[in-house]
Length: 638
Image (cartoon, rainbow, N blue to C red; front, side, top):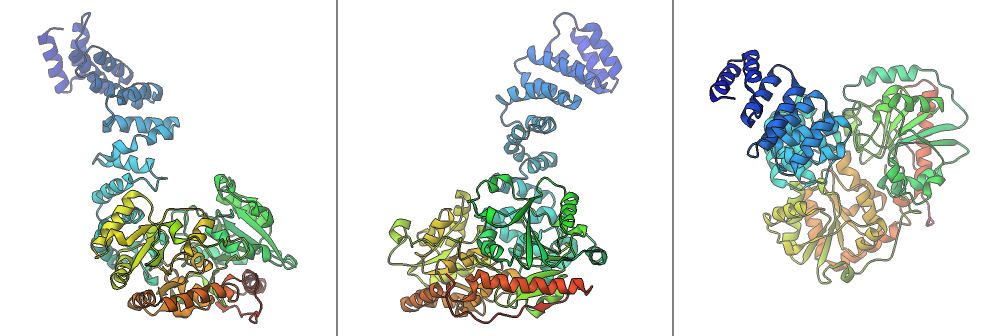
């Protein structure tokens, strides 16, 4: 093609006269058109909607040019993708990625194509490239690809960019806050809490609805605000007042036995829920209660089961059922009381309860607060975690157990001999504070508290479980800024449960987190005979350790406030005699106090169920009630 012809075709293209451009090009191509001519032909054909022909033109341009071949091939891959020709798009794109590994546009094309063709694993490989972009469509696709990922540090970069794109979007800001907690990125956490959280509190529901109930509890101890965190996609906006009224009006055939259904995806014996619950479950009186477990536990976790599931009773697998199908299955079993063990926690299917399943529906154990937007009649707690002052902030009525709301299994729970400090790499001549709560619970105010203790007790070390190099580095940096050197911090690796209980016994004092206390983490420490220092909280999640310590008979470990907890920990660090007495009392009371008496707990729970059922049988609405305590036992139960 002559220079004059190419210039004329280019001019026609630039004035959007694509027919004229194509006419000139077709009349002047000759036997060996150059790459510039072929690229112009491809662009013109694309404008005319002839995408297959355009893709072929760009592929020819790539074959005739080494300098711009990659650019032309990327364009051809994009056109094949636009045509729905995923095989061709991926054939070109994956080969091209070998020479353009960091090309964002290419990664964007490949990721979309692989998702459409059913190859999510290959699509996922594009996420790190997409995260390097600042374009919204690229980082939003990366977020989609990484939706199931929690441990990749790239998430911090990704969600910081999403948050920067939408500084007033509560969903973006709270997601970034959640990710930052996973990696102990305290600079990001403090920036969000300083700049965004005050605006969110001032705006109320309009902003707080962007946060999940669980994430909100990690940093907010205000019950008034906790119930406004409604980013719970399965149930958000449900009209539970109408649902509850209609459900209670439905006809129901009661039987001599009360039929209890437990709903959970944590039904495998190494899960924290079952470490609490197993012995209560097996202690149910079979003459008065029929027990069914509605299980949607992932198969990979069922496979970890050590053999205890067979002793739990009838298990109905609903994992492959829709919510509607699961609700029908539960209704067909005539369940009288359906107990949800999950609430607003990971993988929950609380939406099942919004399908009018049982005459009585109960929230218990999995979520420490009101299960907002879920049709539950009762929440099971105790007088500490659910004081009267909390009633205005709950839709559910309170069923309060007489000692602690938390069951504890003393039979299937491992209690191995203590590991030595030498084996664990702990100093023999230092007081060891142990903090093993998940790192998401370690807020900046918790860091302030722990650092205060370590500074005031210079002969001590902090033994803490923080997972991942990035998170550990961030943790050390934050503690150093508070006057605590890295030599004072000892990181504990994750380990199996038996080894965990064995190592806990080597510590001197357990430290709690707030506003979200240790729950199973605290009871594990107590089971290992390790005293835990805490202080009185302001909502369910922040009162759990007080509940457990009181039920174990060691309320002296509960300070009135944060400063009191610091003073108590420092005092104990300075008194080996008091530490030894507290450790002995904690260990002895495991077999005397109510906390680890699963059979006693079960009898109280059954009384609660009978009270709930009696009201429902008589068409009475749910009402707050306290379960009376059985007479104290005088003999050890293990």
